[in-house]
Image (tube, rainbow, N blue to C red; front, side, top):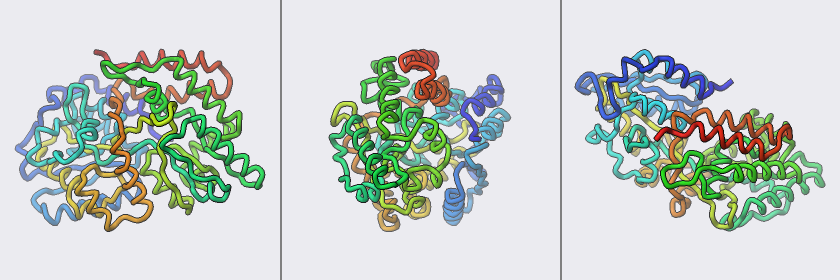
Length: 436
């Protein structure tokens, strides 16, 4: 079972005011002069990321022999529990991977360094401001440098569509209703052909799906000043659309959707050539192509109003520095290398997301394979139309994803009316809004 956000944050909060850290605000790097100190670096990921990162660290050591590096690695399961325990004990790693769901929680507890205080070692000037700003707290403090961007999009198995005789849709104009009809068409073809295939694998239980639906409705889950909050009517329409997908056969029954969502890439429908469409952060198409062995492409999200897709850049993850690091300058030097060094980039490739440094993108073209170029090209194409990203998940709202899934399932399984569940979802979200 994956560590929940609530569990990890409870461990962090259990330290109360975190006395070893509270005296250090996000603008300060305390302890030592930053010269010659070892850098503890901590990240999560699978075996591929682990081997790539260690190879990159070896390359760093060849040119920075004066900066010892101590690597620490964990799978996602256990990463946040361990980090919370280390942080509460005043032993946070110097340089660490940070996730969008946690960056506000750690940043507002004064545990992360303001990266603009180490600008002599860390040059982020070439990063698009719209991407860089996803690493800022509400007060503007930069506590995370995005490693790359992920764009919530539609993955399409072109082999299934070709077999069904269905042309690729025009994703510049398509709507959710047209997407439903297209997915239903694939399922109807599959039934007639005796194929265990659906048009679409699952929808309606994920906060990322709801967030996109909200943006296209002119609303936000966590609105900034001047933005409109999510309404019960919008949630009701979202849940009713999800139910209609099941009703017409565009997606499997809800119970199968739940099982499929937990099955993982290799066993899931989309990764196993049994669904034509899947919603994903776009860099995941590499994994699905490898798993399925089929050609795939990326499409814009369908829109509530034709042409208004509200595509956004999301930081795939961040590098952050501990506010208590004894060697913040050395940690920043290593971070800069991992983000901008061209030879290092050829080792790390796009596994952590599409880098937003144009020079690094260009240098990668010579080493990327077909699936990686699909990822890179889609990210480049979308930059002309992405809208400003939503506010990062506030510390008060990190449990919303779990809560939303639980409540949405009550509506999708038909145990409670969609409108009633929608009211509860909105009330829950209102209680999670950050205090002014």
